[in-house]
Every structure is written in C-alpha cells, then in structure tokens.
Image 1 (spheres, rainbow, N blue to C red):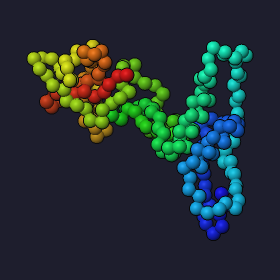
Image 2: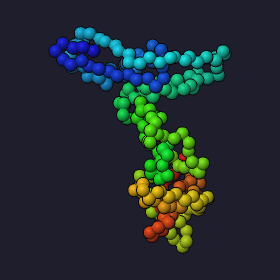
Image 3: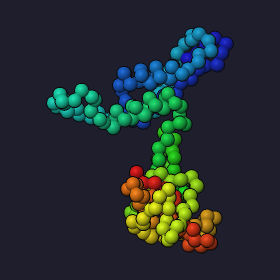
Image 4: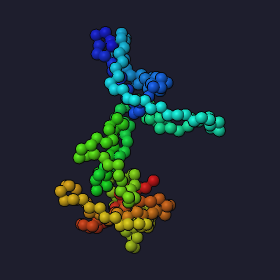
Length: 212
C-alpha cells in the first residue's frame, strides 16, 4: 500500500498449502488489517505473487453428513486455521515440533517456525525416524533430582519403575558429557514419568519428562 511522502506499508501473507478460497484469503487480510497501523492515506495498492503452486483439489463427499452441523475435519481446515493464527499472533509465534538425529534428549527435538522448511538437508537435517523406545513429548528445561526414602523413589509421592533401563551416552567429541540409564516410571495416579540415573559422579536419580 503506497502513501504520499511515506514509505509503503507491506503485508506478507504466506499459505502453507495452495488455496484459491476467496473467503479464506479475505479472512487473512481482515485479520492482518485488524492489527495494522496505517500511517497515512493510501493512494495505491500493489499485489505481488512471488510463487505459484499447483492447486490439488479434494473431492467432497457425495452425500452430506446430515447428522452433524459442524464442518467435517480436513487437513485444509487445519492449515487455514494455522494461517489465521499466524496472522493474528505474528510470524514467529507459531511453532511446530520435529525430532533431530541426536542421542542426547535435550537436543533430540527442535522447534521450527511455521514457515521454516521441515527438511532443509545438510548436516543439521531433521530425521523423520524416531526411536522405537518410549519418548515423552514434554521434557523439563532442567531435570529435577528425585528423593529416595527407604529404598523407594519419590516425586511428590512414591513412584514405581515400569520399564528400562535404556542407556543413553553421548560421544566424547560432542562436548556434551551424558551417560544415563533411562526408565519409565508410574505415579500413584497412573501418570507416567521419564526418569534416569547417572552412571558417573554421584549416580543420582532425576525426573526428565512427562508422558501424555
């Protein structure tokens, strides 16, 4: 949008998938305008499309679902919602989570920006393969040391080990000194925890993550 004697106001709209929905594009524009401050009257508007993608339409159901008034779920609905969320919150406030080829759990997952390519290639490429062993989605920023009372592990209340151990070690050249035995434990309430015991040093027990 051009102004007299002022720099142009630019709105960037990115789509995760190609779309030709006028309603969706209009909604994205309205969301951007809702948080936009225009410094001066607009004298001209220019639209620039930097990349065209092939549009692959999906066949709709032959019969309408009369038993539900809600819109049926589809990947397209989800992507349009994510684009609206990004337009409202800002480009760098919507993240996705991927796994990385790292032994150390602290570095085995990555947070990517919404527009970031999930498979960029190169030495830091993200692997689509995940460990066959159980992994919690929620890791603590700092592992929390567990207490031992009369030979039992405590996190708020006594916990019981369900499975393990799984030994995780990092290579000496990585600069990260990790040598741990990991276990899956269960609380009295039934929730599952990811805990480990150090194999070097004081050999303390720590809570590292929570399973869903």
